[in-house]
Length: 497
Image (cartoon, rainbow, N blue to C red; front, side, top):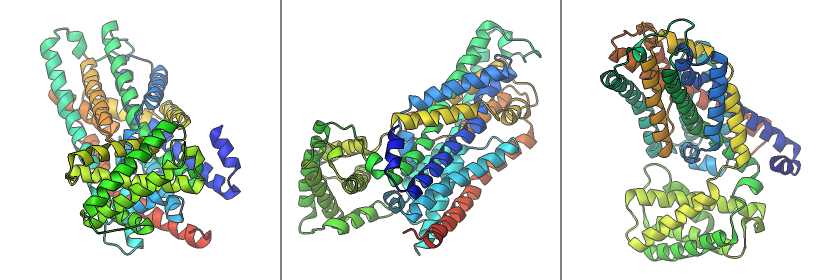
């Protein structure tokens, strides 16, 4: 209802763009649902623990709950990969082109791999599209290749996507071998008989692991869609979504006070260097780019930004007292200051312990005011992901259940693969890192087949590996081309700025 009320106050073109962008974002999560979550139900279906229709509905419900109870850290970790200037100016032609390029390229590749029955990664897809947009944006502005890419964040995300399948393979294989030593009941390691439901205790284990993977998938993968939706809302409806509007007067006052303290401290570090207004914002924006090093003018820019933030918020009781233009400015200031403080903390460039404490407090308060997910966004993403889970699952399920190993998936193998997948995804979620449910679970199944000496189907593994290798470069290309085309179209055909 709040979204509809906000839309009625916007020009017709604006809310048409908004509806289209939100539809694409929800479409991405829907495709993500039936592409990725098939992995969660493959083991319970192929061990006859649950009938297919019951399994996919059950998985869909737990995906939905996973999204609703997610923290949001992964969502803003993904957004942090984007070029600073596009995030700050998402309402511009380049900002709109970025959002559409990310979503369209991710949907196209996911649908393509799904049609071939290949377990490809939605996380890889989205990260590749982000890099493509960043590369194209750098070239359009005649900057060096890769300029503006948050390489530090990209390395963390890339490492998580690379390591998680290895963890899945080794972890699931090791767990299966451990189970064989500890559990002497041969029924756990037998191949299911056609049409025969497993014993109750085995069935309970398999349903529990399916539930856990589904919940973890929703908690991690659902956040990628949340981050994109918030980017859309902040760009198109900044008056309503630039800041968390339910911050209390005490919280707003605290930000103003702490910002004032930080501003004075950074001014002392800057010495005689003084920056103001747009000059300070340009310096912070530049500092946030990869490779940029700390200088006196960085301290001066932080001092100016903190002072301005303190003055702006010191004159109001809540964010609702700010005009739409000021809300947009406060968010931009908060993004630049928060990102710069985080970079200083990581590099240990805040020399004074007391300033370090103040800076950390200010960063957390700014994150609290800007990095939030409204309940209706969580619900919309949850429903899209949950509905996607209930359709289109069979292609990927067949690959995971029948085509990875040369023998039928046993109860113990299914449980081992899913326990490791659940633990890996939840661990990554707590660290704010995206991982691929598809790759973790597929590699887990392969690990149990190898540990059991059941044999692996080389053709399937080759195809999965090929999809894993191709996803990043193909999506980089798609993201770059779609961004460049969209940017040109919006600038020249529609006359946007």
